[in-house]
Each structure stands twice: as C-alpha cells, then as structure tokens.
Length: 259
Ligand code: ADP
Ligand code: MG
Image 1: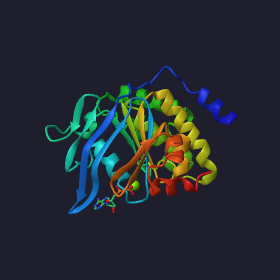
Image 2: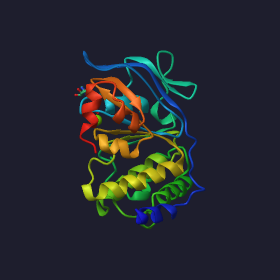
Image 3: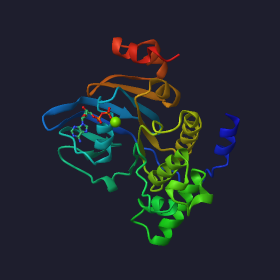
C-alpha cells in the first residue's frame, strides 16, 4: 500500500479539479422493446461521493449508466443534475452538454490514436492547442506524462484504464460514470489500479458512480452501495449497513461470500 500512496502523492493536486454535482434518478423506467429492464428507480448520487451500483448480470446497471450519460433515453421518469432536469418529459440534454464523463467496460480507446489524441477527444470545444494542453494535464493526473505519444497497445491493462479515466476526466465532468472498470484487469493488478483510481477520483472531486457485480469490490471502494435486482433498487446504504442489516435474503446472500 505504501507504494500506491507514494505514486498518488506525486500527482498534481491544483489542476483539473471538477465541481461535483448531485445526480438523481427519479422514477426511472426503461424497457428494450417490450422487455422491462428498469422499474421505478429512485436513486441519488450525492455530490462528491463514490456510489457503487452493485448487482448480478442483467440487473440493469449498465442501462442506468447509459441513461445518465444520455446515450439511452429512458422510457419514463427523469434524471436530475443538481436542480436541472437533464433527461425527462420536458427536457433532454444531449450527452456532450451534460458534464458527465463515462469510462466504458472495455475502455473504448482508439487503437490508431496516441494517448494524447485519445485524451483530447472529448475536448472538442477547445482549440487544438488548448485541447492538447488540457489533455496533457489529464494524463499527468493519472501519472502518464511520459507516455503521451504512446499507443494503447503499448500499455498494460492498468495503464489503459488510466487513459480511459484521463479522457473521461479531461473535460472536468461533474459526474463520472464507470462501467465495471476493474473487471477486465488481471487479479494481481486489481488492488493497485483500484487504489490509484480512487485516489484520482478523490483529487478530481468528481461524483463517481461505479458499476460492479462484485460485492467485495463495492465494499472496498464505495461510500455507499445501491444493490439492484431485476431492474429495481433493493437497498441503498453503506457497505456496513448492507452487510450487517440486509433488508432481505437477496442482499444477505449477495454479501454472504464476502469476509
Ligand atoms: P447489467 O449491466 O446489470 O448486466 P444491463 O443494463 O446491461 O444489465 O441489461 C439489463 C437487461 O437488459 C438485460 O436483460 C439485458 O439482456 C437487456 N439489454 C441490455 N442492453 C440491451 C439492448 N441494447 N437491447 C436489448 N436488450 C438489452
Ligand atoms: Mg453491464
């Protein structure tokens, strides 16, 4: 752990800080064709917290992230960013205007672009020069200053994850969404990458919603956990609450294998 802390302390702290926002799902419903996948979801990520969406495969976690990001418009209900409706009956804000960043499960890096170009990708509103400068700042924040001209295939899985994180954080989003960000990593790397990611999130002061199907992982990284089952939020609370005071057998079983 000491090695991790040293690395993290080396990251610059005064640049690239976001302003965290509160993100709320209100009575959100969704279906694919006629198949319901989200059912009256009411859930808040408070400003600056790390909220884990935990649940088995198919419970609707990724769909909820895509709705927040604006890449999957929900069938009913609304999504609020602070006091602003960003998706709902009266308003739909396009993804690029939401101040919400996303790290995809497979990182979705462009293989033919350098790290600098990959990171600059979300900064389309800036000039080429300013975009490059901001991208360098973002890459420095994840400790990859010396690799700006490298290509994704030249990096380890953990480093690729950090590029995806840099690209998502470069526009200084108010909320960052991460879909199973550690699931593709070698188990030996996972602890290190998790600790680094958390430190970067704390420094960025962004609100983070992290999807995982791994109860132990959620307990390690989350300020609060929302447990989903069949498109419904079963329970929300701290790891301690879900572990010691499960509301039902489903929650109890989900946490029973964690020591
Ligand atoms: P999770 O991320 O928790 O595994 P998803 O949000 O990906 O869950 O999926 C929820 C349900 O919706 C699943 O039953 C899945 O098969 C279905 N689903 C997800 N995406 C689509 C899609 N694009 N078209 C049709 N069904 C989908
Ligand atoms: Mg998923």
